[in-house]
Image (cartoon, rainbow, N blue to C red; front, side, top):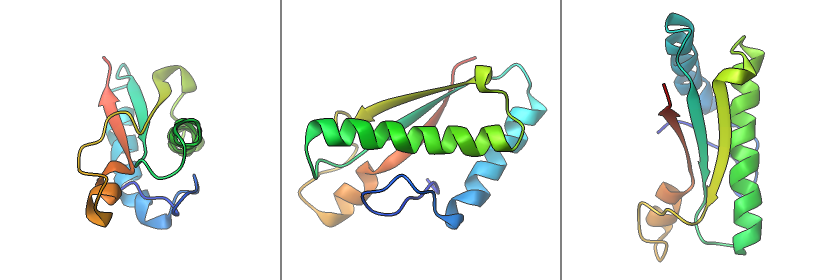
Length: 107
């Protein structure tokens, strides 16, 4: 939680900085650690659109980390689009929960 974007867009909101800066601190403390950045969306829009949007959001996070000195070889960006919802897409609250980026430790 804490990585936020404009609706229907891959522009990171400034409110994301605290969460991303905390992740950067961990990555700098553990230089062998690698991350998978997973982009997820709700089911509004077409499946191909959501796949692309999920990838763009994951890449926006990747770019933020890289600008803070995290080498790209430690980061893998992937889109899951709308395929892995964590909540019901029939409600506004559920769709909001499904629009997320998840950082997963790979190593």
